[in-house]
Length: 121
Image 1: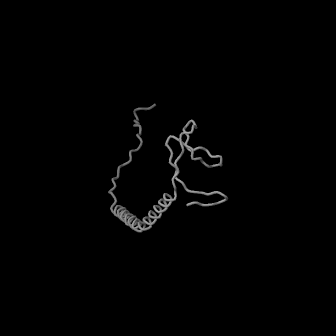
Image 2: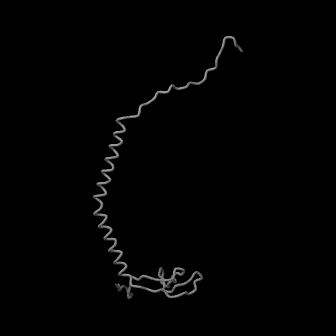
Image 3: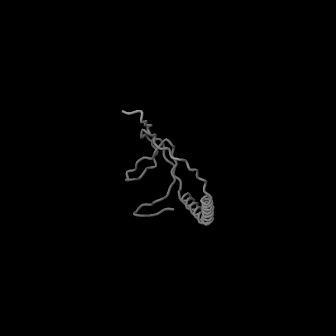
């Protein structure tokens, strides 16, 4: 799919280039050239350009399919979460009704020095 705008044709393309290369900087700000360069910025090869409209349509279609699947699954997920929440709240209510028995342990006080009338300072 080509789009004509301002005396230019815009086209969506997929670019294939060797993994150890990068695209050349274009003279147009923000643009890239189809020349593939290595890390030393030496020309390695030309990138190969493929039409990108089929890929874009495929990605769009996949997004639509995933959106529809999520919309159809949402009520079932919500129902399952509500059921799980109810089970968990019943379990905590049952635990609250039968608390564990408590054991009273006497508190140990501070040690008191033994004073005797025989010992005077």
